[in-house]
Length: 473
Image (cartoon, rainbow, N blue to C red):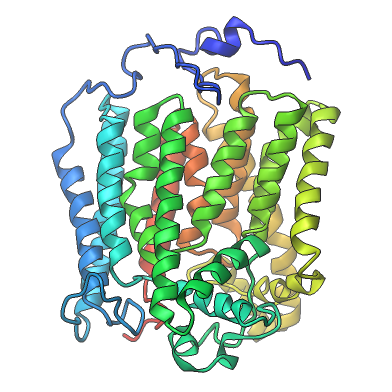
């Protein structure tokens, strides 16, 4: 593939008015002269109500996290930021109010951005950093997954195999904090995630709260680093900062919950940013390595690899596609060779799950009553990938808009496929959108897709925020 840089490559496709991302070597981005899309320039006043809702939503989430243990946090309180525990349904009301405020605030800010509001990326990064630090100091909220990470890390730290040994076998506080749903499930995460988890457990030792604290701090660093990279490489810096660094929903989900999906987002941003620059063979090899590392966090990152590479396949760009594929597969082999193929075994059981709410619940119910569970499971397994592809195709058409630079074809396709997966997959959690949001932040504004992603994340967050305890009302 040619690496010649043309005027179009440097400044954007003719007539689009879009400034393309700068090179990784630190080249200064040319200023965008198109008017209302200039990052960091306020064309309208700040949307006071959406901003207030967003701030209130994050602070309410911090309050719930600090007032642990309660029905939406781990069963042990972190010592750094701690308030008296919330009793009864108070934590439920506050958590739901926090998530609703975050979602409504984000929708309002997206609408204001569509009307010309261009906040300072630096201010958004600062606000997001403050919120992230507060959530990091408090007890994990909304999910108990970080307790599972700590348990898998402790298993690995003891020299055992987290893909065979389950958290319940540990006993003690490590096993106590894991949600009962996952206490007897081996790790479903890749070797990269296991490495981070083991490192945290090596530091924490017998002290589970220290292990969890290290995991939370590392996750926050990755989250903030992803935001900085996005602002550095995106054509619209304000949009990138709003959709990731200062996104109130993601602060509550990814930072407050400490989810490993944040690492996947970091690799996704780096790979997509490189892919949008039409790299040479060395760049393609680096993209493949990044995709392999992403698959080493969670195997669902294979969708990212397919989405980014599909335009190359369609264009019959065989040489860069081959370099990228060999590099990606090589990294995956290097990661999984010391672990063994049995690391994929727990994924087969997890792939049969159907979350609430899901369109597949109706077919699952029909399986119990009419056609049998096995037949229903087979139908779901065959139907959801087809629905994902159809949805991704529709999303690509909805987000097409006016003519845009061809170099964004790969991130745009990856975003559509990731969002299609979030919509169609039988088992879908709100933090799974961590792979979708940063891809959206790299793209020009697509109002329908932005609102759809926000509404989907908000709905899933309202349904899944009980800290592993389940709904009791």
